[in-house]
Image 1 (cartoon, helix red, strand yellow):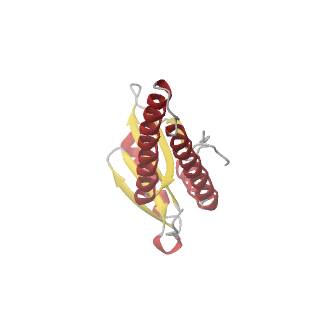
Image 2 (spheres, helix red, strand yellow; image 1 turned 120 degrees about the vertical axis):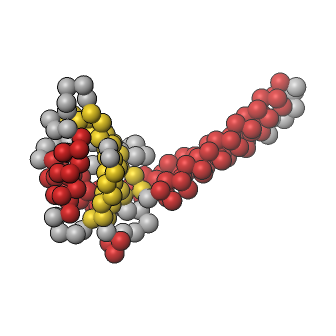
Image 3 (cartoon, rainbow, N blue to C red; image 1 turned 90 degrees about the vertical axis):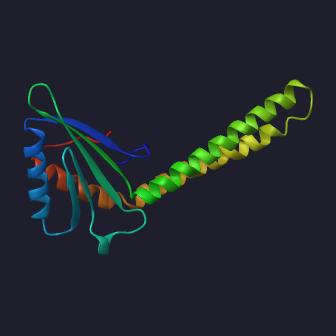
Length: 166
């Protein structure tokens, strides 16, 4: 499962109604040996690695269950880190993007009035930070890939079907 996405995902339509599917997933995961923590709400299920096996880069699987018009269920699954890790990266991207935007405005202004456009150097620095954040996220994803496989196999076992990640 090598993906260039920051948060790999899948979408599939299953033949059950959302409530029955949610109950089936919860029951099968709970009976799989206790390797996972599961949180279940109407139309939403979250699977994560049990606390004692979890590390900073451990993934979680968030499942959104939505009823379709013909009585089936559309499942949208997203793999990602814990909320604190995801928030750290999200805010880091936002801060780097904000400084990059400001640097671009300053650089363009300097260039238009004929001054030395040092703002473009700051823009390059912000873009470098964004690329580094992306590479760190990919590295973290690779550290958690074995647990991601385990989560995915458990999900597929619970529903009795294959789900292709994209």
